[in-house]
Length: 188
Image 1 (cartoon, helix red, strand yellow):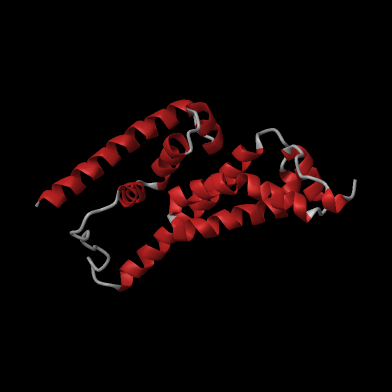
Image 2 (tube, one colour):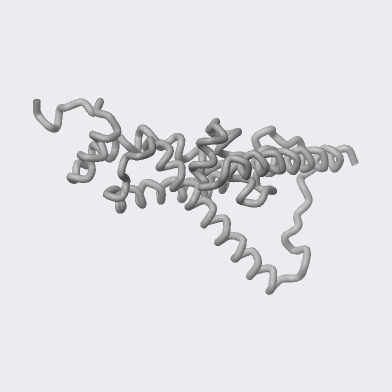
């Protein structure tokens, strides 16, 4: 069969092997297979604007360091782990930038009041997630948005299972408090 006309129905391992040999179509197929899960993770962690850049960076990093992928974990797990790490790095960078800007501007400049109009549910969820510290947000995104089990989340984040459960519980309480405060503010 002609290489150009072959269908890319290979396993992930076969596609990774072909990609390592320089087969651009094989790598494109991997991106196509895992683009949605990587974007969902990055968007949930960083928001759509920054998340798009993070998602692209995940595949760039994977391509550059593909030889480090040993196949011990599923490729989806491996790519999600990269997405979480890059998202956490981006959030930390944003925090440093905000802290630096805050030193130069008066206190309160960044505190904007929520608009008085109706919030769409998605906006509320994104705002609530953004209110969480990155350590808590990563657990919520993996467990509640992406649907990973506690064990899978623990593996992805290199945390003990109990820490994942504890962070999830504390994050849910913080999210509940955020929503209650938002509702109280809307009633005023």
